[in-house]
Image (tube, rainbow, N blue to C red; front, side, top):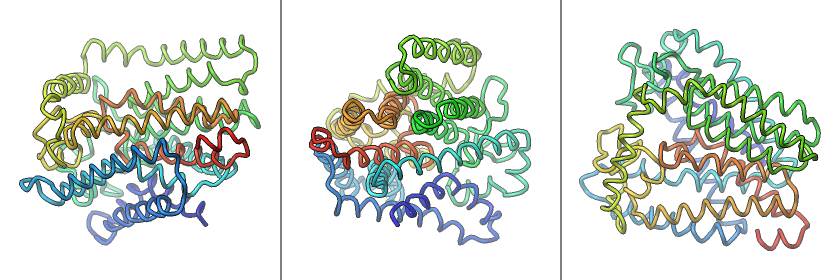
Length: 425
């Protein structure tokens, strides 16, 4: 039953926008707008059940409760000039990592279920790549068939960031020439890229002992999908995770020479594929790079004002930005978003939780030799590179696969018979 709930959440997260936009049909069935809140409610209920009924590692529970407690205090004692709806939306956004981690920890109860979950995500990833290759050249589908701009405006509240020519989000376009990027079944290029980054390494780890070359082929296909999405943060995260995994894993290729050759091949292939993107970014040839750089400078300039106490929920972050409420910081970077709203101590608590999560995954791999734990560890290292440049970790579709994977991997390891690992988890 728990796995069925997890499967429903996985499908809901990664197909929700596309299906809801189709059902909404430009306002023909406005009740479709309730599907998103229902999904969020299901996630909250499952996460609550995990907290109440499952024993969690103290190394994660303590910073998790402390961080969540501070967030709740800021909600209850929020600044009056910021609308309650903005504060509640920002509150939910900041808790996305905790909630989805708890869902994965509660619903996945063993290695076989973990692999079934990865198989489901891999199927979604492949279907999304195929669909993305088609819709990338058929933009009319989003505008004419499902009226996606109307859904983004009226249901998701995207008041800013739309292409004035067709109303599609600007993340559908990228590069110096503003060419169309694949959005896939997730209906978002940014989310698609990060989803494929997470699933690619997890799929490789899941299949390496049973179908090694099939896993390598699927991972290669998903890397092509990442480049189709044009998501630079996902490219960097996936590349770092892949190279780290190939270099430290011992069951994919037992020979050190074979591992060295694979790492070198991956490094060269990624370098060749990324040359144009790196050149444009280093030379500030596209507006996105300039915007990220300006935001980063402003974040560091304004950071001293929140060293102890934050400016309040809704003073920063994506929800506030859409309503033009953000008045502090550069408006980008998950860690900055947490710090500007809740203060630097809360950001450090989140980093404490994240670091402990990574260490437990690494320890789980070293003790139990579970490839998926190693994959999750390296994915955590790769995803950390986005902390100061984007809010990927604070999005449901962008990082949902990662948090579910981490929760499931640790729960699976906690049920092992190894006494040392069971005690640490």
